[in-house]
Image (cartoon, rainbow, N blue to C red):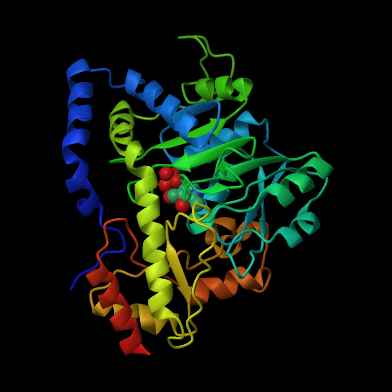
Length: 366
Ligand SMILES: Cc1ncc(COP(=O)(O)O)c(C=O)c1O
């Protein structure tokens, strides 16, 4: 049996006709750049998130970068990010000219450790960038208390948590801005690259609209330096076809996590992920921990199971961030996780048979 980490074809087959209808409409109208589908998707996605505005961008990295810039953060400023995240969280800060300050994560939920935040704050700190990693929405109430006390802002990295919800609020709508990626394998993914920022601030929305379009609020007028990083109309058309399915995709992912947790309880030395209250975790990734990670990964891959590692290197140990001067041991939880975490296949269309096969292979290994 071959089970990919994510099966994009399984999903595509179920929605192909809707997607093609929307794409054909763009092709026929030839409204390729900032066509009406972009605005329509922005409106629908903002509403879905419970935010006032959304600005569609070329990818999630641009969303983070432009959000930091729109907030007026740049050279000499510092932004706190979790040490265990995808590199793009940090890149968004770096591209804006600000300094990345990693914070270690909580070993139970993999998210930025709230008790370590205040120690990392200096006179240069301007923002905290929590990541709702693997699809688990972080409780931002205590973070907001800290930001209030220190006069900081929160920019959420929501690239892995479309639709996650806590205390009645959707991920991305709690901070000043929420940054999304629509990379194909995400819970809501397009058919190429895509990204977006949600916000309740009309001023920030206007800034983001200029920044994504050469710094131009009005055609051929450029009061600020900007970029070319608009959400592609074709991608917006794909996203419009997929958005109505997002809740059921997330529900299916949650059920997969419940099934894995039941089946893997007590197997070997596995530490299974917490399955918190429904909706607060949309299981973009299902991540287990074991001291035998590398050999288990090799075994699973050999048996056709597309397990993976998210992520094998914490932010501070990448060559790209060597200039920050951190040594091994600086963020011990993130470092241990990078050696012990393993992601199992999870996608809405995965079958019980595929889950069963994966579990059987893990049991065989131990
Ligand atoms: C946590 C996180 N942040 C940011 C990004 C960047 O998104 P993109 O790949 O669309 O640039 C990703 C996804 O790749 C991500 O997983």
